[in-house]
Figure (cartoon, rainbow, N blue to C red):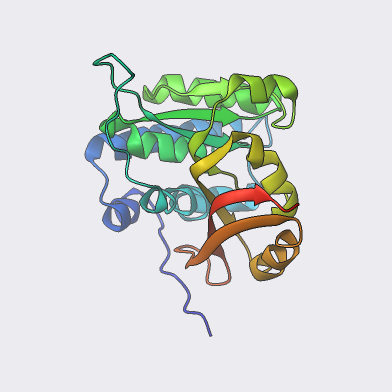
Length: 230
């Protein structure tokens, strides 16, 4: 029987769990305040989850950061310009997990985030929060499967998505942005193993499961070397 994870009830518990700086915590507190404000007019998250935002949304997103590959400094050819690693978040919604990860990794200066969200109101919220907390991200208000979206994005170091689609469909959305070294970080619920079994009929990949820090029945599926079966 899985052990129930401890409740991350607010900023203090979040800081203790993830070891974030005071500046990062302040940005997340601003985010939480804006989420509560915008939720009154836009259905950004399930209303029942809003009182538990630090656990259900912030911590659930933040756990992915430790699973991302280390962002090593890289320079452009024949240049001293540092090229950041790229993280693409598909179906960002209210910013989970992509905007939370962007806030947590902002101090490193080694990541460039693209948040893909087709709902114009949610995309407007993402732009507003990013400006408010002072974290640069690229926002694409398009569906991930659109040709225009694919043309705008190169292969990513990390691809994430939460509660967007079943795994087989999700891998199809991710494939155009996935290169040989891309890592996919995909939070899934109790049906993760069944979804994975279905996905293996169409896709080849390496994977492992990581138990969720926020839900005893959930896990993060970490996928690499994604290709389509012939």
